[in-house]
Image 1: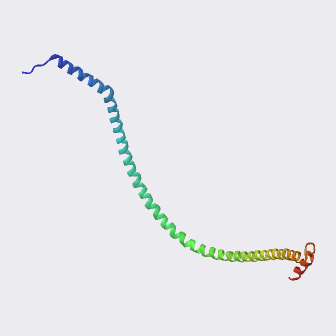
Image 2: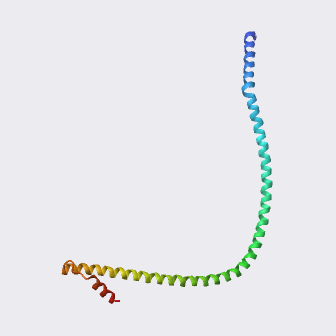
Image 3: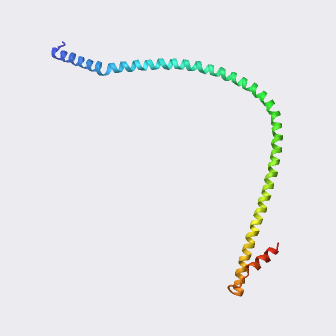
Length: 156
């Protein structure tokens, strides 16, 4: 038959109550709180999902309405803009022609300035070379700078 030892039974009961107390104190409350928190989050998620679906259907309706309006407005604006663009194009072409002529005239003036500057530099260089050549040929102190400059001025 089955022999029961009272000491073992009491030890098992005490162990069970110790484990129950530890579980209840350290695990059960936290586990219960987490479960309640998770349940609340799921409820919020379900509510948010329903709200999201409603907003999406409303947004789709508004999008369709706005597209229809935009198409109508676009057609009207295209007709108006064609007439305006023709007028503007003519004005812009006239203005561009005037600007091109002004730029061309400015370029011609710049080229003339550059030509005169280069001519003056060239004359100065010729005088310098002539003076050095004259000095080498006739010796130092026998150069006549005024004479050479007068001769170059006559070349124009």
